[in-house]
Length: 640
Image (cartoon, rainbow, N blue to C red; front, side, top):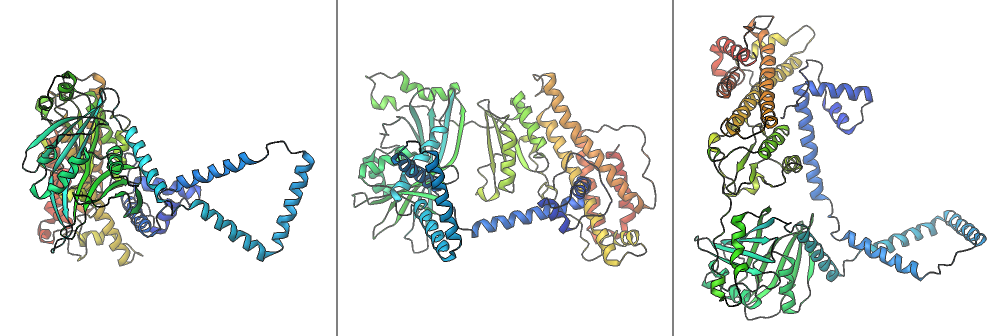
């Protein structure tokens, strides 16, 4: 659970689930809504319930979306067709002005006609059915797949144009190449063949293409746009002798290994076939069906994301009695990057060649080196890095989530990490968009990480990760009161057992109290850990070149974490003092103890261990008093 950056804690009556749902739906009266909002800002328990209800609603909506019929992929096209028909109809009408008396007579006739239908229900129903049928016919275009395929390709081409590199930029596209054997006795077999990286330059109409096989061998080439004729050995790095049929097809079609509508059109034009389209498994498939050819390629398939019409993969399928194979090129990454001198050098050989140069000379290109992360000791913090860090701080992305800012070898920044939901990823990206113009953002979901190779290791200062039971997305608490055997259970039960309070209500208050203590301890640790990360990322050596305003921004982030650590520790102390046999909090020494981040992390870790011993580990019952005293001492020190 994330901490709201305002409000205090409250011991007032808690909201029930019905009230929470009414609050979310906006059904509460104004006074009750304001009261509920104030209570939620100050109550950990009700905020936790609110979060659970929201998660349940989101889960319901996800399931609902899978059960609802899919929205027509080409609804906008049908609306446009209907408008065009209306326009043609309007143009055929006489545009001479109609006299007022004639218009009045026409209006009266239509009104009486409508009244007549109202008094004749059967005819009205028939007319309504006829109108609905006409609308369905006008807006449904299921038979015209050619138009649908052309529409998808046109929109995909528009997407590509809008994502082309601007002046001073290059676009980088990474592809994964696979061979899928479908006709296999043991089931479908997928084999990785290698990768392809494509750079498009904003300064000249050429593409730099590098293919790298699984063995590590690579080959590079410059290809002119609209003149796809790459070296026939370029894909030879990826293919083996058993792929000779596909290799011959690629050479005969002069196909550039690129997922683009232009290259896909080239395949269909060569065969003289028309494309068809369909929507399957939430993806738009555009297909060229080929007749018999010597290479055995039966179909070329382009997949497009229906949300933004971005081409995602292109496949070549064989269909023979002996084998059924698919050669799939899948886009794994796309980014717009600054046109650095290193990247500009890749295109220099082509720009410098003359007509007397031989083909072999032109293809002796430098290898493409992808920017790599640099250590903090090798770099200085920049103003943009401070802005990105502050944005992540405001989004609470520093509290337990594995999100890091990497200084890269080309001078750029990379924000990379792992989150537990797509909604969280979108929220972080929206936070970064206004300030991170030249920053690459790679936020993954757990299901998107196959082998761990997609993520860089954390910066060296934070090689140790946050413990799993203390991470920001941990839903369960450490409190375990199911058996009633935690060391403080009886003491808590006596504390909350009042005249007129049932045993069941007392148990609920014990559970709420225990979970709040555990949550406070976990959040205190996350703030201490985030403070340690800030001190490592923005050390004195790295911030030497920053302005006073940027240094102040870093200090504000540090102070924010320190304030929360102190506030949480004081609240925990106030909650636990009555259990220690005292009615007032332990007195402070009056001396402000400004501790470094390492000390705070150590104290927070000790705090969590003591909370676990008191609220979850029944074996520690004999040491309950000593552990409670130690916990209060730790909380008082952190709260000073």
